[in-house]
Image 1: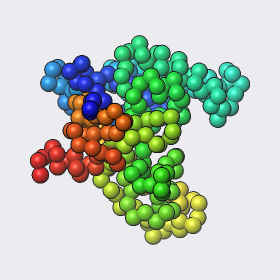
Image 2: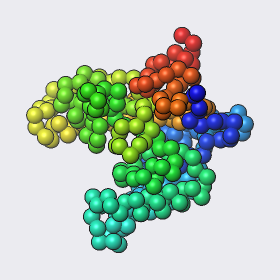
Image 3: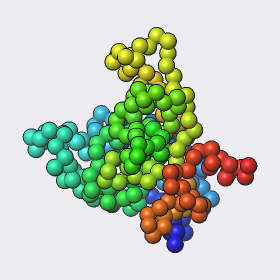
Image 4: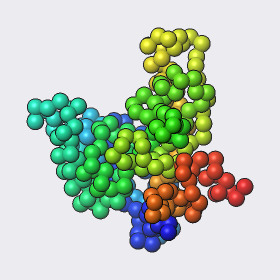
Length: 267
């Protein structure tokens, strides 16, 4: 039996936007929501609260611009108060447990991780379905292991000689970047400027940053809002084995953006 990840007959999908910095991905999702409008025939989802783990993020500005409540709990201050290093994940569940408690008061069902730079632990992961966008095609694997995970997926793809890169949306699990894939963007050609010598760390970093920014604009900003809309319309489902479906069809390695366009246009 296939059950929707969200049943729209039970009401609008209430979403929390999690961010640490500029919040551009969160902004694009909010803009997508606003474009669909309100009312019964409007947006099937609503970002009801913004959460940031840093006072230096753009969360207050975005919240003010779109009239969305903002919650900030500075993770740096959390660790300083306890005289611990941020790399110490043994106390992170304490931080996440309180975060989940606060977000639950807003009736949140899904958390979207839009540039949220803290590793989430089980109290937060288990409280809400988490959706992340990752700068790599997560369907590419090496045996049983996904090939391009972690913070430097774009760099790793360039170094591996990949001709193209893509972005993926996926459900967050306790294993970083290992959750079920929801959607994969159209592939973008890897750009290598003539003046870059990729054997030099400085030039490799330039290549990584340039290509990652291109992917954000032409990948993340397209598939992230669409994924949340499709999810909120009940188009994603899961069977008893935990396998994902889209419109009743199995998507063991995610839905390709091009496939979703064909479904929308009927071509």
